[in-house]
Image (cartoon, rainbow, N blue to C red; front, side):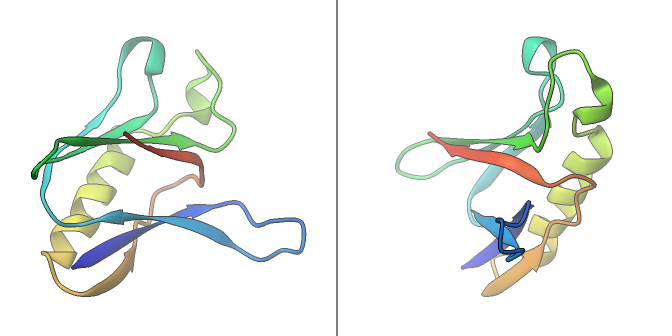
Length: 104
């Protein structure tokens, strides 16, 4: 099983932080619109449908400078495609760190 590394800001000691996103069973990757504009949502299919929301660090409603863009969604898609279900981990390469990755 392959994973994509979602970079987050370092903690006070300067140690970098990250969350991981499974590259297996991805059905949909999209940039949110409306009130959630600038967040990326990834849907995984399997026994249960799981939705992962990736929120950019410093995200502010209405401030597009703090939002992910369609380019970031494409970079994430490319990283997942590169993994192709292989083992290991690959960095996402997105333009912003994530403040939060929510798995539901």
